[in-house]
Length: 608
Image (cartoon, rainbow, N blue to C red; front, side, top):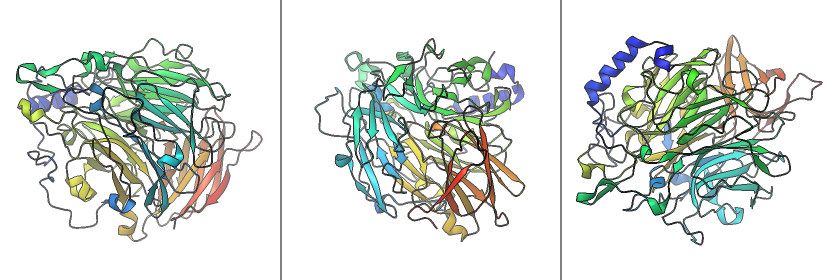
């Protein structure tokens, strides 16, 4: 039974429905690519001048300090994405490519790897465009090391997933593609080797997540696939009599099965979809996150699907999953409708000790927040949290929860952009470029920041991938966003300088020894004073992107020390007290005979 029947916010649901009808009218018959609702006419809650692509929002700049500053030019990153779009409107070109933030050479500074598409028909001999890797050299300045690294893949790349699959201490790279996916093994000397490991899934890959679902201490791999589509049978969608073409919609393509690869421990993987109990499900997968969502010490999966129910697979501790999709309340919206799931995230949004779920969706629909009610049940509380109105005119993609302003409450960011650049020619009010959304977390409510988030948020963009990362090692979260057929943006978090040291942070990265080395599936409990905050260690998340694996905990001035408790995958628990603020730690899982975490204080370049 679907969520609106099970959990019954019927009056709230009716109110939302009436607002949508009044604002938007009936949905037209043409279904756009990437989502189930056609372009809308805007929302009174989003003061956007949408007449001119690239124009600023119709609100003045914020007079005081802002949250983020665009430092892209200062970074020397000159990457430019290529969607492969053309008058033939190949479907994959609508969906974009992601970014990965990770320290590939273990020098203490996060590096950035950007994926790109390419034109159709695909040509494996084509020299460019290629994915590009940028190594951070000092401050926030980067150098292009693509050629030296061996990561210059020239296929149609979409998603990126980072994980140390061979537990040698160096992060490896998985690239999903339209066409064979690629696994690049980090050799530890600044270079990567393309390996044939049984994970070169030839389907239409999108997002992927590393996880250890069988709890053998080795990372396995879940790969979302979108649908069955070929260049040779690309249908015509639009107005043929006017010679106007648009990207076809999701219901024109058959949803595809996803992939689950089990790590054999010898450098190769095997197909484990059937043995894990997931072989009968199909969905147009877009985003995936792996975490211990129900905190039973077994890693779970949440998958955002495009006009299919969002999957919730709960780890059973026996090398399989229980499909809780239809019983969870997190598969549909409050009205019981399928949505056009894109990016996903998991976090304890309301600080009640339970992990909640979030998924971005298509225009004329809202991005959905599912509150965890316990007992593997969730409820659509989007309206209650104030997240409906500003999302309606936009198509959401990459997303992340993080405490950007370091007040102890999670904030939210969503990047937006349409799938078609010619909807005005069809008479629709649907500009290609759309405003990104940043929200201040305020307990059980979110407040749209607008210009206070920064100048970038006053302008329109065609966003897709999004990753959060502390690029300058100052203890707060910076943001990287990819754009269709354009350069990315690097947004430096300006909160700490603006608050002049009033905020302090505690930063930790976990290392498993008995559990998988990346600690995916662990739950971390931070305690300071009378406060307690839980955070999951995640694989995947956002959209086509990989974020900084470090966890950040904001401290109040009177809080002088931190205690940490870690619930490792499989049920082991270890803890440590007396950790110091304004420090970064590596926290290592102890042996079976010990209960205390092994803590190493680190001082990465640029840190206070």
